[in-house]
Image (cartoon, rainbow, N blue to C red):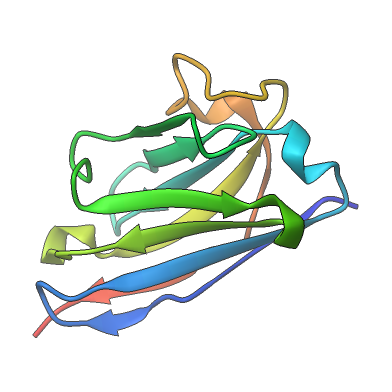
Length: 128
């Protein structure tokens, strides 16, 4: 069955960096866009970034644009999220998700209904 497993979260100081990984299995990985989302306590889940079937197609949410970089290694069935210059407001559980239809990121890539499989999430905490 389809499985997505995130890792790489942790506690980091403001201004620090983390790299999240999302390892996928159970489907043809290079046929689907992959999205990263996050959910902070008491807030709705929001789209962070999306990458198409190859890494020539990437999009970012306004709050992370210029600080986060998404990439993928189709040989390893893995998508990465490099997070630099982290801020306390980046604290959240981060999820990766498989796009249900598109090979590139949809124009409304941030909408959860575009994705049909989700990982269990990894906690990122940015604090002194």
